Image (cartoon, rainbow, N blue to C red; front, side, top):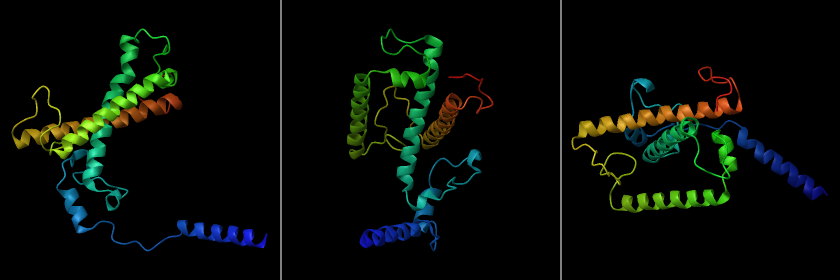
Amino acid sequence: MKTSATLALATLFGSASAFSPSARTASTSALQMSELDGMLGVSVETGNKVYDPLELNQWVPAKWARETEIANGRSAMLATVGWFWPQIFGTFDSQDVTTTDPIDAIMQADPQWWAQFIVLCGTFEAYKYKKGLEGKSSCGPGTPVVDYMKGYPEDEEARNTMHMRELKNGRLAMIGVASFISAHFIPGSVPALPVGFH
């Protein structure tokens, strides 16, 4: 009994140190700052400087963070289309999904559909990874992995403009999807959206 009480107290006091202030080191190194300074994405919306208010760059490599931002932005752009599509065009002839509410539709979808979706996404990611090993890029400057319409510009300035547009549209879409979800679960939480929006 005495041993278990001692162990419980040691665990309690040991875990308390996780919440105590610690000496902070310099938040970013010169290398990390140079990584950020050379990145595309600085614009009026970010105050013409690198936007990193939580100083995450001290833990996350800038290249990985940018690739994640672009991938999530692309997903959010598709999600925005997917949010409105059933409300405008209706749903496919389906026995399991009978609603135009995106959140309810997620819960109504058959598990087999989710399995197929996960396999499809895994296939895309594996293809992107393979092409990345060959020197192609799926999330930024460089020869694109996929360019079916041959629309990737030849000159550097046009490429930077295209990348900037994709970043801005992706950022806007991420904010939009977050507002749709907020309005769904907390009616009236987004002033620009009508009550009952889904």
